[in-house]
Amino acid sequence: MKLIFVAVCVAALVAVSLAAPADAPVPQIISAEFDQKPEGGYVYSYETQDGIKKNEQGEVKTVNDEDNKPQQVVVVRGTYSYADNDGQLHNVNYVADENGFQPESADIPVQA
Image (cartoon, rainbow, N blue to C red; front, side, top):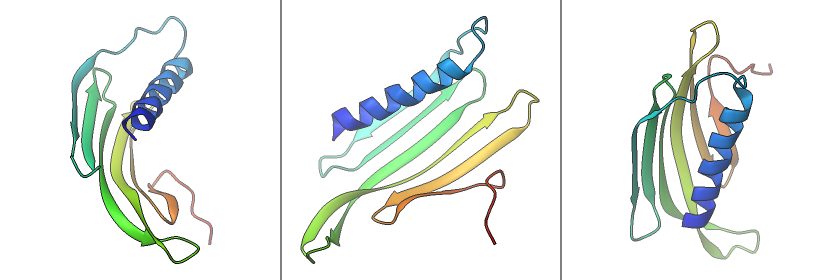
């Protein structure tokens, strides 16, 4: 589980760095915290010099699978924010659980 978490974080940071122009300075990490709980939950956060912030927590929950057998899953709740090229701040809150990834933001179009 920890390896998957690290891989996702690295992939996210690589995607952000590839999206930046080649001559743009690499933002420094101002703060970063990670706390792995013995039962499998976790809390982590980071903030970069250019204003990107992310906070996330995962907690273990028991749900029934398609065969109605109990399975432990990690329910993830979090938020991230960043400023676009015009300096406008964007915030996204999300939950990832047995129902999939569910982001919420004023910037995400909603189907009627």
